[in-house]
Image 1 (tube, rainbow, N blue to C red):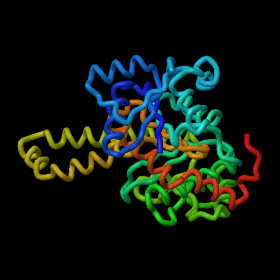
Image 2: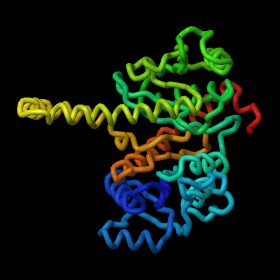
Image 3: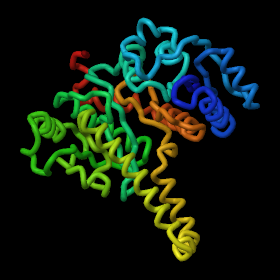
Image 4: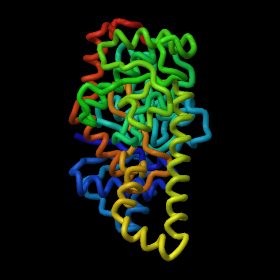
Length: 337
């Protein structure tokens, strides 16, 4: 197994990426190929005494900025760390690709360079988010702001496979985010997608309202990318607000500080549950090989866990299982777009 990592993706690259990959190589035994400017990688490693054992470098002189048009990944930025990494994956030089760089460019790379599974309409960003029952998978979390009903059906199938194979949830409950639980609620998109999901051969429980999702209402929350990204960003903001309020409350007086000390382990567990770095990144479901999009502000811990997540996807053959599930429903016979 070999995991390809974009050494210059993210706000804290290349240092955080190098540290995270060095930890992954040492702790997980994962051979890793770092893609990026060789001289800068070697200089950063030497300056910070980062062991390069188990790490290989493939030179890529450019970096695609997050504000740049993602479609330029194939043209002006074809020699960027993102493009070269995706091409290496497509050419079979690795088993999975991890990047904390531009989300749009990662979607383009996964869709156009790595390419989509046969019959898949669009790749979807699948993000694991904590809830009162443990966690749930949100998709699409931002790759496709506009969707068609058959796309939401495919998201549900792919999400169900991921949660069963990676998170170990048997027969995961798949719900579609909507403004009500009745089948006739929502726009034509939700109404038609509801019908398709009911015949998708998965444990589709129907529509779920957004307030039920963080309360454990489903294991997979299906929606278009616009809705999903709003849910994701709102959840991130609320998590920061809750942890900030909790800290202020515990530091208000001597008595509350004693209370904080008594609840130290519980508070630490709560903060860990809300820590996105624990989950590594979001998988771009629908690509022919695993592509993991880590958060743009990923630190070394998040990068290490993103590599761990990539390894699990390879070991559990998530892509192969998705392809087989879609083929069983005849999705592989549908024309690609």
